[in-house]
Length: 108
View 1 (spheres, rainbow, N blue to C red):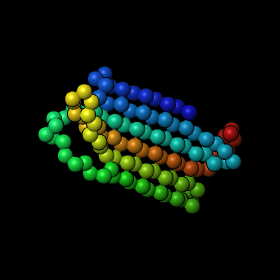
View 2 (view 1 turned 45 degrees about the horizontal axis):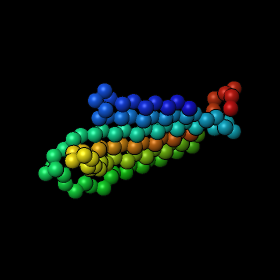
View 3 (view 1 turned 135 degrees about the vertical axis):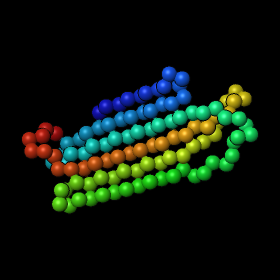
View 4 (view 1 turned 90 degrees about the horizontal axis):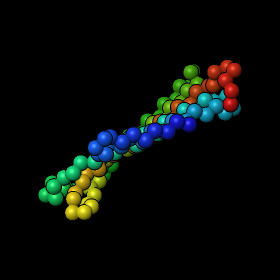
């Protein structure tokens, strides 16, 4: 498993990333997770009702190649108040799961 936690120098952007590969019963599973946050200070008068997060889902199965992919992405934003300051936090969460036949001779 690989995990990364990246924060910009001004601490206004953070990317969390995790990746895992599992080989079990001849099936190779690759899982990738991304969490991205971007913070912007806003004025009180610029705050407006936020829309609901957008969710995108896709699933693809190829029986000839014996592969399957499942991807989900959620994008949106929220307003936060702290110490009399107002912030908008935009976010994007992504989960990708790819399944395929493990290569011959690959170890579990």
